[in-house]
Image (cartoon, rainbow, N blue to C red; front, top):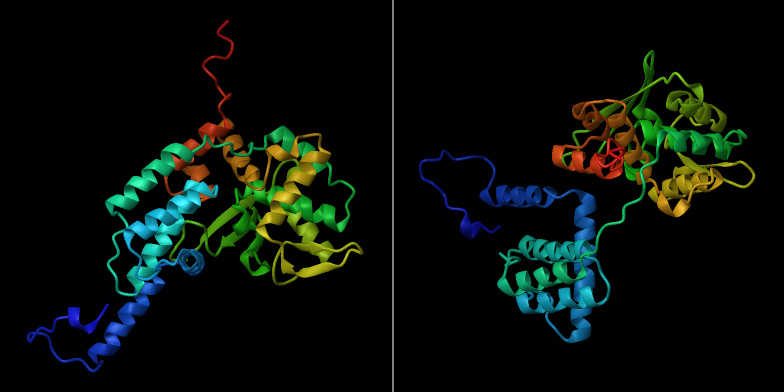
Length: 325
């Protein structure tokens, strides 16, 4: 945004703030329209594009649509998935536009290449399995020894399942986000994946009738045993039982799930951290919970996405082909 495209009107009253300062503030707000993590990812993607252009003796900025089309094709040939390629394209467009170029992301040359990439490289998705009620019970039973690691893993499994948390949301939780109440536990989610403005949300985890499957009791037991009174909820546990100070990575959630699955006699390759979230949605739907109630817990905003989420995981629930012969 430059001062040359901002036209003054003689009808407007004078203001104390110089127009140049207002333009600078508008530019700052335009940058902040993207979440910090998204901007960081875009800049990293653009740096990769710049490095590729240098090796090919091509100009990265301003880049021609032809250069970008060739780069996207090279990414596809290198085995990159369409979503990764599309993010690279978005990053290139973002950086150009932030620097004042109305860059033609939808240029015909790019559109044709992207269409070909999607047509030839898109594969049928093979998402991880949703964890069933019976499987959750078996997995939790493997943490019965009561070591610090067991207590943490049990809390991760149960809070992750009943809270329908995404992995990143789960490991981002702090003690300050908790409120233990008569009904159970209130948890503040400071920022969800689809909460770009950081408005936050709240989830409720009730006490369960079965103590061994109660997320509230499991979390309280872990916090008390680990001596955690502030900071991250879920942390590493050393070989000597020492509890780390920093939060687990989101990848650690998958490892907790897969370790418990293996001990429970399940195939660990079929499950991951996301299996807790999809398992909750599937189980809740099977128990007759309405879509609105499920979406309040999963924090889905799109009914279409939520329905597909449940439908994939429950393909054999009330299956029309079952029992007709």
